[in-house]
Image 1 (spheres, rainbow, N blue to C red):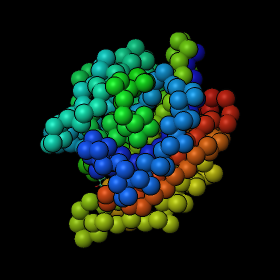
Image 2: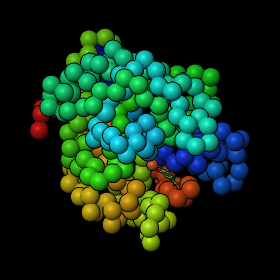
Image 3: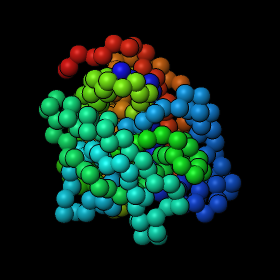
Image 4: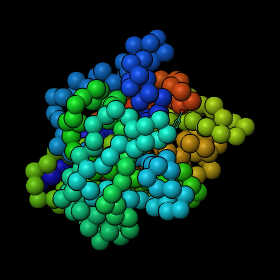
Length: 287
Ligand code: DHB
Ligand code: FE
């Protein structure tokens, strides 16, 4: 049977991708950012997952403002690296796992999560920057990826509670997949940042730090954070944090925290990163 072995969260700042791609990662501004991922690189190499269910958001790249799915799942064999205006990042094509993705789509939809099935999709910095942070420079990504895209760019995004429950459903679906697969779930985006308006540049360190703490200690408290509270406390792009709750819901009630990293700033964003492993093997009952 497939199993979820770990969960990971990380910010997806596009300037991090640009720093790597343009050979600037050794500059003093960037060194502390990449240092926060050294532990993770070693850890993941010692227990490489077969597949990462990578929860991310599309930034009006694959989906224009004409079609904005709330939850979409990538069921293709591969996903091209998107051109976001400066040419595609020079990183490998993302290889999918169509069979697992189709199984997840079926399980989730029959479990009453109405996923949009996407059979062709270019993936932007929301997906490729987390891969680069964890795997560095490589000729081919060492894992297959099932992308799950979440709308956090156009109001109304899904609630944190809905995201947490989707994570629980992802766990049920993964555990019903017959092949032995080591699966990780990644929740990306965040932490506090605001890219526009009079509060552009907002970063709220106390909010971020208590969010990081609660991810392992008290996820119940995070499930009820409202859209207005995200906007007020974490800025207009801080809503990306609901994607972390999909990962958290997929890990079950109890987790062990293996690694935590927080750094301010990278570009306009507070960078947060966690590695968690499930502490109970029992599948949660539906709630
Ligand atoms: C920045 C952060 C993001 O999450 C994003 O999607 C675009 C830009 C930034 O910090 O500049
Ligand atoms: Fe973003």
